[in-house]
Structures are given as structure tokens and as C-alpha cells.
Length: 432
Ligand code: SF4
Ligand code: SF4
Image 1 (cartoon, rainbow, N blue to C red):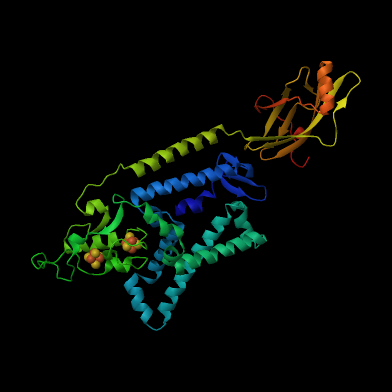
Image 2 (image 1 turned 120 degrees about the vertical axis):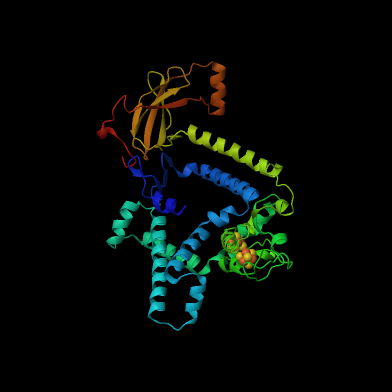
């Protein structure tokens, strides 16, 4: 996930940044797709689908998102790693923290905070690089030539990352994150959770390695406290499932390590379900899980089809309000419309315009237009038709009502560029 976050902004696609949210031009490029603000309904759908994916994963495997994919936690682990390589593991750190400040302690702490700031800066730059082309952002940054909003957002993310992952850490999960509060309602007795096997571990107590603890009525837990020491949210999993637990699995590894050293079976703390802990059978297929899965698949298919069938052309037709219809001396009628066309694809295109709906209807303005990728064109389009030959009664009724409507259809077709190369001089764009 970290590699994706830092790396995606550097990928190129069709000669431009593969993932770029170009706010000034209100265009959002994601590989082969360019989305405009009019497409935000798709974003809403995507968020709803992701919510269902989250519900499905939570019912099935508990807080998998929190422990392995949530940015807050992923960055916290990244900072903990930086802390460990500069200041050592928890016990060493605690011992050193009690000592007075010396050269070694000072340099280790300076190294830790420098590493944190480097990670925070890389995060801020990578994030802003999704909104401002990163290949221009880095040279501008090195030349101290950043714009005001880029400077502000990079600074903001440096501070936010440093504070959240370096200092606040689990406080965000425990006190600020709303998801942590309500996800337990999605759990059932077959949801995978990290649990301490109380039946096997109790009575806990310290002992020597080869001590016959079973004869002494003791369980497998040697009460070393390692599972508590490594827990990033500072809880004791042996007290049962708690809402603070983010299912990171650190206590599982710590306890397995102790079990190995003692020569006991692994899994005193493990991923399991309530049913399994009680000696029952875990049911994988259950109505709620199947329901989420079906809803999720249906939405994925509908979303995929919508993307596939999406027409990357926006057409608005507006009556030219500055001019009424014109009745020519030869009996024909001219009407003018404003066509607002947007080419939302990633290639330049030529489009043909045809009109149908009334006998003798034809366009007397350009019937082909060229629009560059990502540009829009506003053009005046004039249509000419024969005067309708109506009965005296119809004409009288229309005159009384002072209006009549005759629907016409405008058909736009994309002409393949290879069929007819576009002359760059005739290419129109939004500024023309
Ligand atoms: S790490 Fe395992 S053995 Fe040690 S206290 Fe925790 S549960 Fe008991
Ligand atoms: S109890 Fe275990 S899984 Fe839960 S947060 Fe603490 S270390 Fe992670």
C-alpha cells in the first residue's frame, strides 16, 4: 500500500501522469479514464461499493482494514519501524529514556525525528503530487518555486503525518475514528478475531522452561507480558476482545515467539472465531456474509458496465436566445442553437453532427468539428427546414396558442482519426 501511494503518481499513461486530479482544469485522470465534475455520480457509486467491501471484509475477517490497510495505522507502523532502527526496541528505549541526555541518546533521538520528518515530507510531496504533476512539482520544490497552495498542502501533510503517526498514533484509533466505534455491530460469532485462548492459557504464571506446569495446574501463558508490550494500543488481549484492538497481529507474533522458546504449541493468541474457541464449528457461509457478497458483486458489475459503456462526450444544446427563428423569402425557416461539446476522452477527435426529425431539415453551419482531448467547444449551429404545411385549423390553433414545438434530434458521431487526419490549424479548443 505504501509503495502504491508513493509510486502511482510517477506512472505515466498515454503521455501524461496516470493518476492526476487536475483541480484547476476540473479533470481527474485515472489511467485510461478522464472524469469530469459531471461524472461525480460515479465517485459516489465507487464510495458506496467500497463501503460494502469494507462491511463484507469486516463481517468475514474483523478489523482487517484497521490492522493492515488504514493509512493511520500503516503510517504508524512505518514510524515505529523508524523508531526501532534508530532507538532500538521498546525495552532498550525505555532504559535509555531513563538515562540523562548524552551524545548517543541525543544523536539517536535526532536521527529518529529526522527520519520521521523525511517520511512525513515524502508523504506530503507524494500526496500533493496527485493534484499537481509530480514531475514538475519536484523540480519546482528544489528550485523553491512552489505555488502558495502547494506549499500550504505539503506543509499541512508534513505536520499531520508527523503528529498523527509519530505522536498521536493509537489515540486516533481509540478516540477519533468513528469506524472503530460501530464496526463491532457487524461482528458475529463466526467473524475472525484475534483472541487469547483462555482455556489453554489459564492459570497463567511464570515458570522455568522445563517445569511440569500442567502437573501444577497451570496453563500455557507464562505471564511474560510480551503481548501487552508490543500492543500499539496498549491493551491486554488476555482480558478479552476490546474495541481498542485494531487486529494488527503484533501480539500473535510476540506470543508465538514465546511459545517457540518455551517449546509449547503456537497459537495461544491467534486468529480464530468465538465458535471455534468454544469448541464449535465456524460457519463460513452465513446469510449476512452472502448478502454483502451478492450486493457487492452486483454493484461491481453495474459499475464496471457503466464505466465500459460511458460515452466520453458531453453534449448540451441550448436555443440561441439572441435570435428568433427566421422565415426566409423562399419559405424556409432557420433556427439557431448553441452546441456545447466536451471531449472527455484522452485523444483528440473529429465529430460529425447530423440533424433529423423534420422533412427537409438540414444544417447550414459546419457539420464536422474537431475537439482536442479534455477541451470543450461552444459552436453556433444553424438548421434550415421547409415551412410546415399545416391545415388552416392547425395553423389557427398554433396562432391562438402562440407557440408550437417540433422536436428534432441531433446525432453526434465520432470519426476515427485514422480515417481523416485532423489539420492542427482547424482544431478548435475552448479558447477559440
Ligand atoms: S505473550 Fe503469550 S505467554 Fe506472554 S503474557 Fe502474552 S499470552 Fe502470555
Ligand atoms: S491486542 Fe494484539 S491485535 Fe489487538 S491491537 Fe493489541 S497487539 Fe494488535
